[in-house]
Image (cartoon, rainbow, N blue to C red; front, side):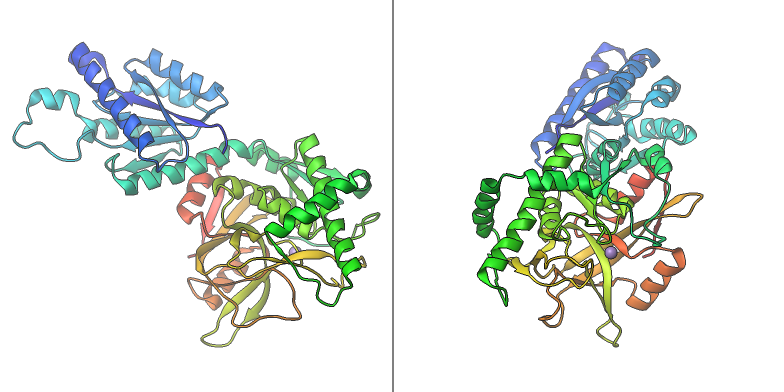
Length: 471
Ligand code: MN
C-alpha cells in the first residue's frame, strides 16, 4: 500500500461567532474519524482546518499541493462559506479535489430545528455556493452528494481516492522499452513527449544487450531457490519435455525475471516492454518472467507498446493490483448465442484474473526464433469488467473502453497453451467491435474486473484527456 493521505477542509466563515465555528470543527472531526473507522476507505483522511478566510484557505491548499504524501483534498461546506474566499487557493491547488456535498445529519430534525440549527447547518446552500466557483474555475473536480455515513457514498469516495492516487503516481511512471517497438505497427507508436507532458510518463529505450548483462549476472543459487519456492503457488507440468529441458527452460525465465526486476528497481522503472523481433543474446522471449512481474504490479505490454505498458501500471495502482491485466483480442467466436472474444497474449497475461491454479508449462512459440518459453497457463474469471485502450491520434490521446462480461471458454484448448480470458462486450460483440474499430481503438488493452467507467471518467477529467466509454 502506498503511503498516501487525503486532507479534509471544511468551509465556514466568522459570521456566526466562535461557538458555531467550534461546532463546525467538532462535527468535521466526527465525520473524518467515523469515515476512517468504517474501514471502507483505502487511504486515511486527515482533518486539517475550518476554512474561514481567503488567507487560511489559500495556505492549506498550497500546503496540500506541496506535500508529497497528500494525494487529494476533500472539501465540505458545513455553513455558507463565501466562495470568493476559495478562488486563490483553488487556483493554486495541484492535487485532485473532491467536493463532498454532505450534511452532518442525514435528516431534518423537525421537532427541534430552529435558527441556531440553521446558522450552523447550511450545507444545502453552502455546498452550491462553493460548487459554483469550482465550476467557474474549470477545476474538473469530483462532486459526491449524499450522507457521509452511507456505505454507498463511502464506496464512491473510496473509488475516487484510488483515482486520485493513480493520478498522482502517474507522474512517477517510468517505462523501459527493451528494444524498440515492433516494426511497422501503427497503434503501438505515438508521441512520448506529449505522453510525458500529459500523463507524466517517462519512456526510455534500452538495448537488449543492457538487459543480457543483467541476465548473465544473476546468481544461479537464487534461481535454484526460486524454482523450488514457485511450486508453492503454481503446478509444474512437464508435458512432452524432458525433465532436464523443462527445468532449464523454467529456470531461464526465472533468471530473466530476476534480471528484469533488478534492472527496473535499480533504475526506477515500474513498467517495461519486450519485442520478439529483438531478443539478441536472450534464450527465450520473457513469458513467465513477465507474468511474475505483472503479478507484482509492474506494468508490461508486448511488442514495444509503451502506452499500454504504462496504462497497465497505472491501472494496477488504481486497482490495488487486483484482477487487472495486459490483454489482447486474440480470436473470436462469431456464432449466434456464443458471441465472444477469446483474449490472451502469446505469453504475458498475468494470473491476477485466474480462476484456477496456474500451471507452468514449456512449449514452442513459433515466433521470434528462440527457445521454447515457459509460461503460466490458466483460465480467467466469470465477472463483469471493463476493457480499456489508449490511442494516439496525432492531435490528441484518447482513452477508449467498453464494459464486458467475463466468462469461461467453452472448452479446453490443448494445443494453445496460454492464459485465456473469454469476454463479450455488454453492448454485444457486433455493436461493441464495430464501435471500437470506428473509434480507432487498438488490439492491446487493459482488462480489469476492479475498476469502472466512472473512475476512468474521473481520471480523464484530471488529465484533461478525451475519454470514450462506448457502452
Ligand atoms: Mn500483441
